[in-house]
Image (cartoon, rainbow, N blue to C red; front, side, top):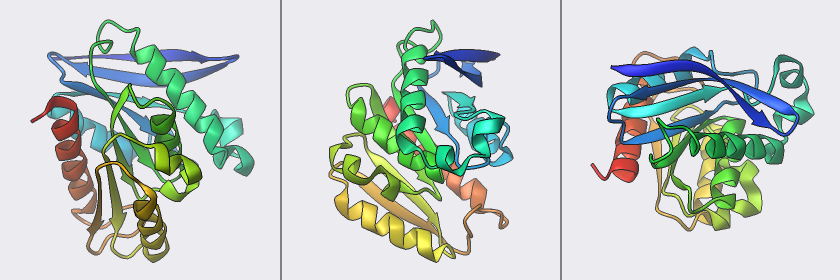
Length: 213
């Protein structure tokens, strides 16, 4: 059994809307940072979240930007703002009965991966693992040197530009790091079996670093 509820998280004068699912006996909690034009209803991230839930991990899917903000390209690429809101969500999780004692991980997609890495660098004691799917870790820039959480970078084999950007970020990261390229996948992992591979890789990474399994 898992508890599931819609939540609102205060972030200054802004409110984040999300969905928290916490399986009974969860061994960790993963907060999702979505990319541009995406949110808690992203079918790709919902799929990954279900796989994590089945493995005994709690998940928080949320909208880091509201609808109006999501149409503003400056907001979409405001990595500092996105990271700040992700940190507010992490603080909120630490005050909830279902998640307060659980190790925390971040799952970031596209620009959300840059935000996840900045948030991890700012709060190294709290964040225990990061997974990036088709992410832009390069957007974390100088924060990459301060990330301590073990970080898995997953990129599609046909996503040439993003592969190069992830390789550049990999060279800067000082934490335990792995770059995994999924053969035949493009940026959104829409090809048969590729999103399933992303979910499997993420599950194994989070179980390794959040539960010790």
